[in-house]
Figure 1 (cartoon, rainbow, N blue to C red):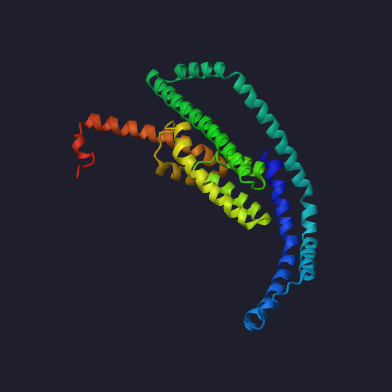
Figure 2 (tube, one colour):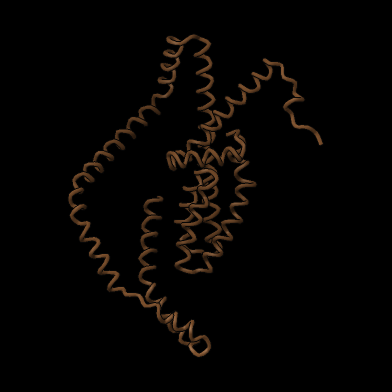
Length: 291
């Protein structure tokens, strides 16, 4: 839905901007000529803003011609890469479906191998950690998907109510980007505001105000109730996990980093409290002091 709704509209917007620049400049010239008597310096500066569109098109054509040979020489490699990527994607999908259909059997086989080749104490700890990871990842992804659908539906209803353009497309985009914690919805807001700005600047301002209101509603009411404390990670560490995951592996890292950091945080917390009990450290030495 994102590919078929958003990308063509973004391309159409850039094309509209390119077609509207000469009209905008002509309107600017006419507006500046009205103030020629009052502000001669300003009007002369405005009237001097001439754009050589033919020269720009000629330069772009020369650039395309210069890169045509390199493009043709790499066409075979690109085609081979595309075919190979499609084949790997299809095989990966089939393999993933097979794993989902056989997940109970595979889980039993994995446990058998774990207890067969590892000491029982090590195997118990490994199974416990993997069970915690599975529960954390499952709760996080399920909660994020439900929260994204609710947020997208709210945007769609609100944009229809206020008669904002591109309601369905922007709602789908915001729901998709909301899967990324902290920063995702703002990416959808930026793209949506840019698309609306081409149609009507005032509508774009209304959309940004609407986004701020719905975002506060989502952060304070929807997200705590839908996702809740299933991740068990403080907000500061969520932001750090998203930042580190995004800088290392991109969008996939943003999605995976939060539940992964939650599992590591839980294991570290257990280890810290266990060591405190073993060393019999008094609670008064590490608890916050009352003021």
